[in-house]
Image 1: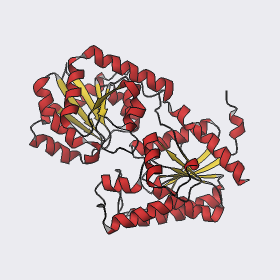
Image 2: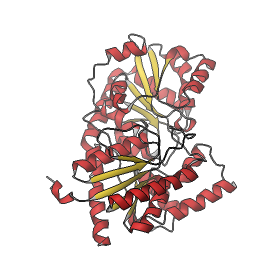
Image 3: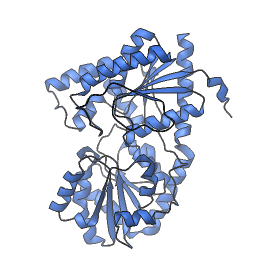
Image 4: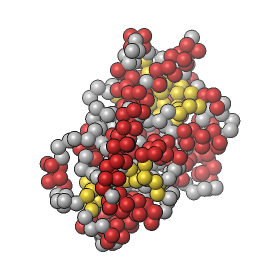
Length: 401
């Protein structure tokens, strides 16, 4: 048993350049990091944007209100260039008062903010990345390759990557991509550890009959569920385009597409394709309710097209015992191992065939669900994953001293 008292006195300034908390993947990771560190007697203060909801037990300080900026969904924005300067001013004020031992910065924008703080308080800076900053911009269509904006942000990303004393990724694939594309970075300061989920909350066995009634789900049909961000790069367009053919081959199925933004856009797309009656769009789901929603499902799907970003939703699927149909990427294989059902990357027909296979083979689907749940319990709990930060903090603090 780890002696938690040995961590007492470590203070972490966590910079979150995002509207924390907004019930999506990156925010869940930040929340569970804070919870895991608090269990180990480490004091964490989160500095974040002016919007987002407060979560009990998390010490949050927000920058000044910017009334015209209300974006809660993921993705780049032109406003972030000045928002992060405002966040830096707030983080610096907090740092002078809080006197942290470590600056723990999420995303590249957080490292930019953290570097400004570090110039004044001279404390170690950790980068907590999900993937490439420019890669995300390309995924979201924010920049076009070889454009002036692409070149500027690539230069900015290269510069930011030189600043942290430690760079942490959520998948081996993301780390390998980083080292292959940013060769001027010392590989020894780059590490990865796969994320996880809170298995105290995410598990099978919830009573969800009231939720079935609330959502007006059809009785007696198997449920295929997607829960996450609704964007093209998450593969929602592909999912909706599959549904007509799936229903023609297996009538006894219904789809839940849970999450935000762009709900009306995808409802219209479903109407255009004539599949609205087979889909329930729930809109935004509060993080506390996610385990119950996942317990409605028989099959969990993720069609994420990014091959470098983490895919945190899979841990929730696995923990409640859902068999998972995904595209065949290194990140997905690292998470699911031999418990995943893999479709050919970005291949609509292949994905459709895998879903139909599980619908038609119920015992096989249940087997994969059990295997996935066992894998999470053995390897991927938030508490085990984020305990890794303690050793990193202590190492950097000792070197600083």
